Length: 347
Image 1: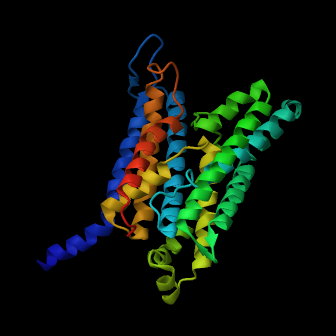
Image 2: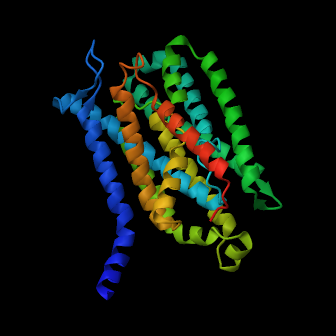
Image 3: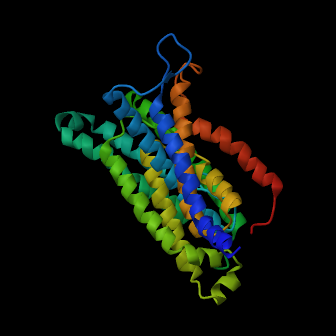
C-alpha cells in the first residue's frame, strides 16, 4: 500500500509533462508528415519528402509550436493573476496592440523600400526589427489596460476585462486604418498579420529570438509560480501571507506582453490559444501554477501545430489556405461562450 502511494505521488507531477510531450511529439510528426494537396487533387499528401520540403515543414511546425507555447504561458499568467478564466492576451487587447506595432513597422519598411533593395542588410534589419515595435505595442496596450482596470489602487477583474475589449477594438480600428494607408504591395503582408498566418519562410533569427524570449519568460514565470498560487486567494489574504501583489502583477503583465509580442512577430494575432489551453490543463491537473506552467505550453504548442497542419493540408477544400487564426477562433469562440455560460466561481 505504501509503495502504491509513493508511485502515485511520483506520477502526479510527472503526468502533465508526459502527456504534454506525447501530444507535442504527435503534432510534430503529423506536421512533418502532412503536406498540401497536389494540383487537381483534394486530399493532402501523406509521408515524408525530400530534405528541402522537410526543412520548410519543420520551420513552420517549430514556429507554430513557439507561438502556441508563448500564448499558453501568457494565458496562465493573466488568468491566474486576475482570477478570471476568460483572460488571455487576445481578449485583453495585448495581441492587437502588438499587431498594430508590427504594421507600423511594415509601413516604414515599404516607405524605404528603395533603401532595402540597395542595401540587403537593411532588409534583414527591417525584418528582425519587427520585434521592437511588437513589444512596444504590446506594452503600451498592457499599460493602458492595467491603468484603466484599477479601482481604489486595486485591480478589478471585470473592469480590466472590459477595458481590454474596448482597447482591442480601438487597436483593430487602427489596424484597418493602417491597412488602408498601406501601398498595395504591402497589403498582403498586413493581411497575414491581421488574420494570423504561419509562414514556412520565417527567418531562423526570428525563431531563435522568440525561443530565447520564451525560455526566459517561462523561467521567470516558474520563479513566481508559488506566489501566484497564494495570489489566487483574495487580495487581503495574499498580502497577509507576504505576497507583494503590485510587484507580482506588474511582472506578470510584463511577461505576458513580451510573450504576446514574440507570438505576434511569428504569426500575427492568433486568438484564444491562451484561453483554451490553460483552462483544459487546469481541469486535468488542478490549479497549481507550477503544473500549469509546464503542461499549458506543451498543450498550446501541440494545439497550434495541429491547427497549422490542418490549414496546410486543407487548402484545396477552401480555395487556398485558411489563416491559422481562423481555426483557433472557430475553436476558441464557442469555448469562450461555454465558459461565459457556466459562470462558475473562480477557484
